[in-house]
Image (cartoon, rainbow, N blue to C red; front, side, top):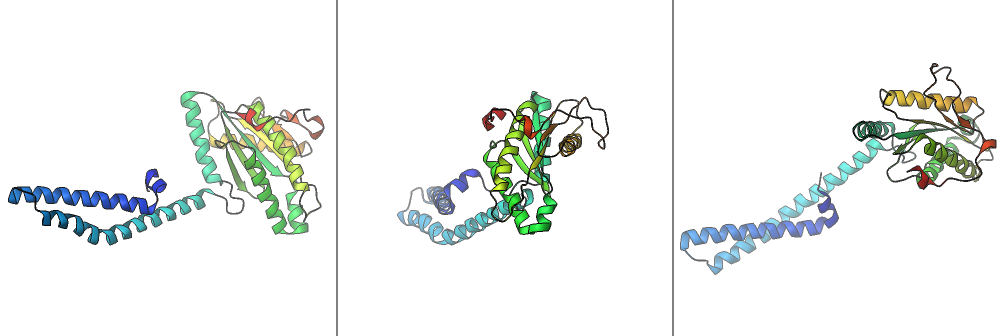
Length: 276
């Protein structure tokens, strides 16, 4: 992997720096050899110490520099493909799990918390069946674009698969994640209704949970998210549900968490900046 400063300079600037260093090293060696052999510096030797690396070293350095930049570009492309969903350009589950593990370690060391939001399009299969997968795919792409517009650079928006997405919010309480989820719910209904290829009203259900020191790890967080999302679906869809840690029920029958229905939306629209 190339250092950041080499990418900032560019290929030709890096090649120029390499040539200057090569010529400087050649001149230094030549000066030392002439002084030891003859006790003085010869003008012919000085000229050779500059011309030889310039003529012989330039093609070699150009080839190596070109090769290094191409390899670095390929490495970056492979890394992007390894962590990104091909359809939506959201992060994939592998990268999400990695970021959650990082957040857990950070919270365990420095304290604090983070929240997760899972969203799932309601009755998405009917859109694919009636209008075709290209229309359904475009829904998912639009959903990703709109969500990314309204989150911070430190947040991670990932696609788990199908029409399920998860948003990781570092340093965000459960209450603020709840408000952000409801804001996204309202916005996504408007985006879905603007589609020219589909007359259906496609809503989205949200599940919210937060990390606390008593949780065992990533798997427990995902179980809690699934429970909250299940409850949102059970409550009539198009709503936001928060998983309650006080619930001791199984994943098949979670206790009703706190939730908000479309008829109980607060009169104000919280800003995304509040989720910091």
